Image (cartoon, rainbow, N blue to C red; front, side):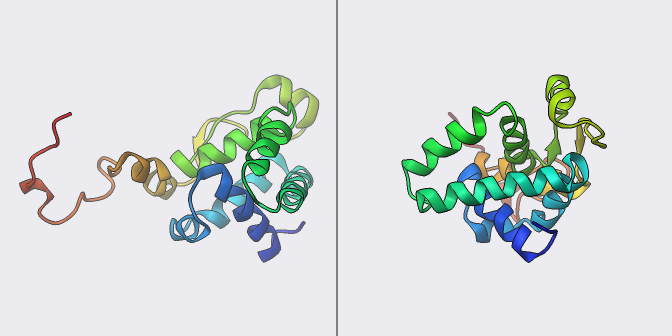
Length: 158
């Protein structure tokens, strides 16, 4: 798969069940292409294409329906020594906008010559657009305003 709309479509298609957010919500972050580009840059285009081909096959084989899709993601992606670390990093990209270094054993076996495999935020905007803020019902401190007049609303007591 090339870095084209088809590649982005495949990336978004697997990102929906991995994150629990809709395609529209993921696109609304403005980060989809940047995250896919980061994947190509860090693990290489060959590994990215291989991963997206597998996820496309999983989506087709299960028809995108639960519980078969959930089971396939757990068994073929998350439990996989090769694809598990990539899958977890894709989830982390969407939720907090950061790439976490792939394990040394993974790099030795699957990622010789990869570049940029260190802990880092993809862009400053990636932190701000992370899905974690919506999931928490919050906003990124120091990055986005909580909303007009929100200072006048008493905090919720739990």
